Length: 258
Image 1 (tube, rainbow, N blue to C red):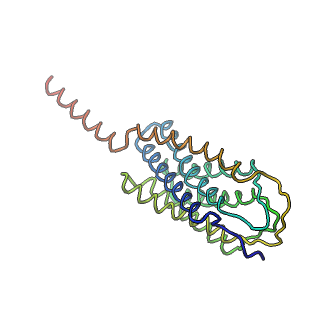
Image 2 (image 1 turned 180 degrees about the vertical axis):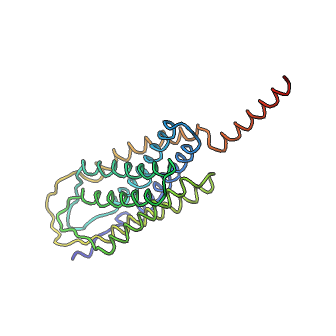
Image 3 (image 1 turned 45 degrees about the vertical axis):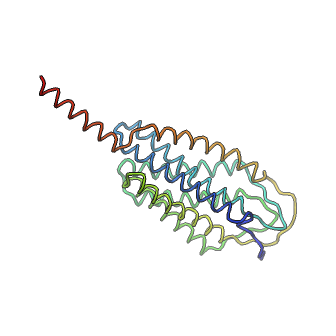
């Protein structure tokens, strides 16, 4: 067994940065979902829920995972990443979180959506790990794998509950801070399940982490920035209600003048 695996090669930089991405993605996902709840049109609601899936599944979960992986190293061997499988893990994370959001966003029960999204998050994590090629034998401790899956389900269910119940920046920020802890906890629990042996320094297939991560994070980051602008320029549910109340009062006053 190899006893010198490092999950924090660069110290606190990667876990802190990963946590920040997770909180940002969670916050933006909750805001997009709030906008979805504020509209009646199926097309508009679906568009907002897709944005929420990209923010929460892409930035909040997938980016956090791979930022965390930047700090992972196995002294004595090299690590390469299968690019198609890495991209698939990103698309899969967005898809399963989106499926959960659509279920609760269109008034379906919370639990099935939470279980679906949570299991999907866990699959994303271990798919991302499967994309890693090393000159070592990698196995997993089953008990910690199970714990990581349970954390993922709890985190997903909490996120979906917050998405359909919370309003206001303060409460959403608090929920996002908690979500960041849950997502990071799932990631590092899954990483703690890793068991490495038979380490050899050989050439490995795949691309270096920096070459895989930077363009993908840049792409997800660009979409996130666009979503931030769109969310900032759209009306919230409370603002729509105030506008409706104002128009109703104006309409009543016009009828009195008539």
